[in-house]
Each structure stands twice: as structure tokens, then as C-alpha cells.
Length: 147
Figure (tube, one colour):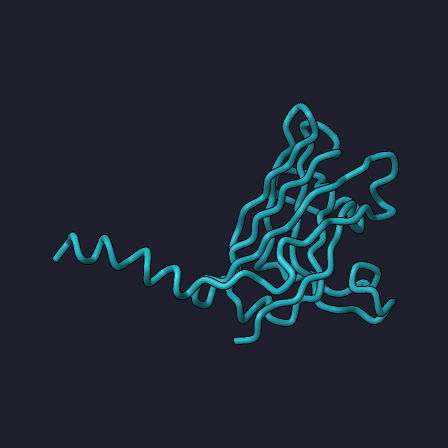
């Protein structure tokens, strides 16, 4: 019985997995990046009722904390990354770049919390807790799967 379960579990999990529409997304540089040249991707996958997110970014300041999260669409612009939408704090992911300015972020959030997100934004953090220090250095529009 244990062997059957061990064989069947990956098949069950795979059947519940769905990559977000358009994923992987390409991050674009934001005005707050200044002299930095961040480039990278964000990959989102749905596992049942959870969205797992992984971001790979290079061109950031070495040994610096960064914080990322999904945002709702704001009203300042039709462009999601320029819209000034509210952050979805349950999707917050904090990480630190290596000596070469490379950042890997991985985290999860309930799909119900992020289902209306329209963009994913990465900010410089002022501390290890992930307090945003700017409006964002890299961003990409996203499209979440409907429940």
C-alpha cells in the first residue's frame, strides 16, 4: 500500500498543477532602479489553492535585501506596473542578493489572496524583514488563473 501511495502522490500533485498564463514573465526595470539594470523572470504555478512563485533576478546591488509581492491594479495608469496598486502582503517574499547581485526568491500565497493581482513588483528592502525602501526596482504584469 505504501508503494502505491508513493507512486500515486506525484501523479495527483501533477494533476493539480497549473502554470500561470504567460508564465514565465519577464521583469522590466522601474525608475527607482536608478543605475541598476535588473533583469530576470518570475514563474508562477498553482498547486491546488496555493500559488507558488519563483523569481530569478540579476543586475541588482550585491548583498542587499529585496522584497517582492503581488499588487492589485491601481488607478494611476492602465499599465499595471505604473498603476500604484495596493500590495498583497500575504504574497511577500524577502531575499538577499549574492556578491554578484543575483537574487532568487521563492514563496507561496493562497490563490484566493492573489487571484486579482495584476503585477509582481520587487523593491529594495531597508532591512531583513523586507520593509520596502522604494516604489520598486523591477516589475512585470501578471495574469492569475481563475478559481
